[in-house]
Amino acid sequence: MSSEVAAGTVAERFKGLYGAEPDGVWAAPGRVNLIGEHTDYNDGFVMPFALPHTAVAAVSRRDDGVLRLHSSDVEGGVVELDVDALEPESDRNWTAYPAGVVWALRAAGHEVTGADVHLTSTVPAGAGLSSSAALEVVIALALNDLYELGLKGWQLARLCQRAENVYVGAPVGIMDQTASACCTAGHALFLDTRDLSQRQIPFDLAAEGMRLLVVDTQVKHEHSTGEYGKRRAGCEKGAALLGVDALRDIPYAELDAALARLGDEEEIRRLVRHVVTEDERVERVVALLESGETRAIGPVLTEGHASLRDDFRISCPELDLVVDTALSAGALGARMTGGGFGGSAIVLADVADVDTITKAVEESFAAAGFTAPRVFEAVPSAGARRVR
Ligand code: ADP
Ligand code: MG
Image 1 (cartoon, rainbow, N blue to C red):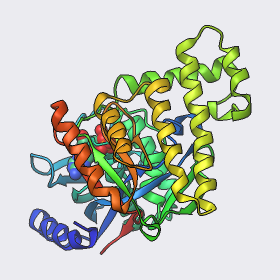
Image 2: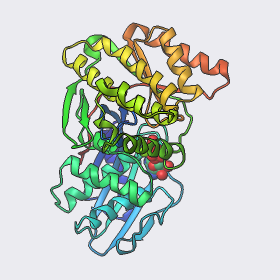
Image 3: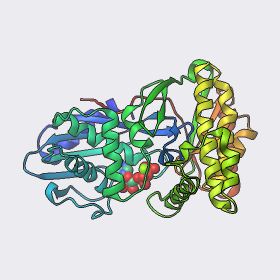
Image 4: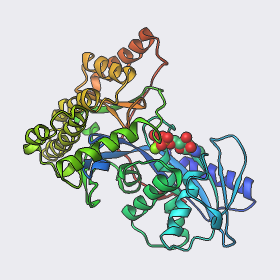
């Protein structure tokens, strides 16, 4: 379902719910991260691109302090909130994401006085494809337009991250929101998460006879708790032990010396090694893509997977099986993508090998007794936009 097709439907449903046409309809995509995993909270580099899958929201402005929220993908009716009463971590439901955006805008001094919202999303939730950021960014962009706030994509991304960190209570980095807000069709976004400087890198696989497959393992991750927080805390400890602001500040050429200085902190050493080598991998992928050597990024992606599996230790049997099976079946490269512990893997392949690889992965899951994976092709698509 493309966002354009959905726009009319979403506007119709809005009218059915609230009895009037919406002021407008906006779309914001989920994302796949090509390379640069768990680097965004270390001030490092990431390289996501936007999926064709989007959250689409019909929104009208209100000036009476009332926020009404409805998702056609969730049981239950319209949820009505008072914008003055929004409180961080007071809501454990899906409504915390859009309400958090309203809260973050208001906390930053923007006068947002309410809204009616109806939304739906084709981004699968909990699959590591950032359905949460799509949800936040679509609301932020709608309010930015309706309240004429004049905020740029990266500024909206920062506010959405704050909404998720403080209001929802999930310690996520800045990548997902920036990807959803700032990506452009046919490109991957090379983003420096320290200053949010960015460069659009042409990434048109079809022109070169290649495809990028996303394999959703259907294993649901849980981002806001547990392991993610532990890795993040470990990275912060590593930076503190090495006397830098963030692991981004350890140059690749000085990695061995830095690791030696960590003494018997074996676990921290592994985390540091992943982050520093991953930043270098992002730079290598950028250089390869910019010099037209697209095929050569395959092995770099695979190296990234090994680092996430062995050093960062956030893979799982299903993700490893996708990667191993795809490579055996002729893939150019493969890696888990997203936060880990489930979610999705990506596979770079020649067009001619796509069917063989897909079949091999599906058969390997059946043989292992895993839930059947969902495999689809990811075309680098547009970032957040108004669609009506
Ligand atoms: P991810 O961002 O990787 O998909 P998260 O756990 O960060 O996973 O976010 C998923 C949460 O976002 C869901 O549990 C739900 O609360 C919310 N969400 C995502 N899509 C929708 C939707 N279409 N309608 C309502 N809530 C949604
Ligand atoms: Mg998320």
